Length: 159
Image (cartoon, rainbow, N blue to C red; front, top):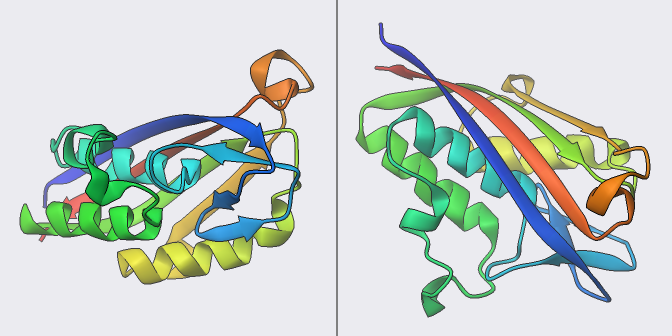
């Protein structure tokens, strides 16, 4: 059995009075992530981890931010398309471990809903999706609530 690991990272600028979608969940906050799609930083990091593990380059290669097809699109769709590419190469997804870094809002109450959205999109059990969150202790662009960061790792295996 061939096992591979992937790593993903994403960052988005936060803007006042902008929607804030994380892990497929709409968060109530005075700022939201800005980007070409819905700017779901968590799902973008997961996409990059999955694509990287399968040696399929990165999310920007497959879903260019200059392509009008992806303008405002739900990142759940980008995740589903990424999973399809990984499966076409003969891999199945084992697990996802992700970390969000932002000052506010608090993520913990939303983690079960995020896990449900991601599990449904990927086709794996909720128990195989770990999501954690931390602050940046009010330091840097994250601490000033100018941006949000997500990291993700995944395990895939050849079927």
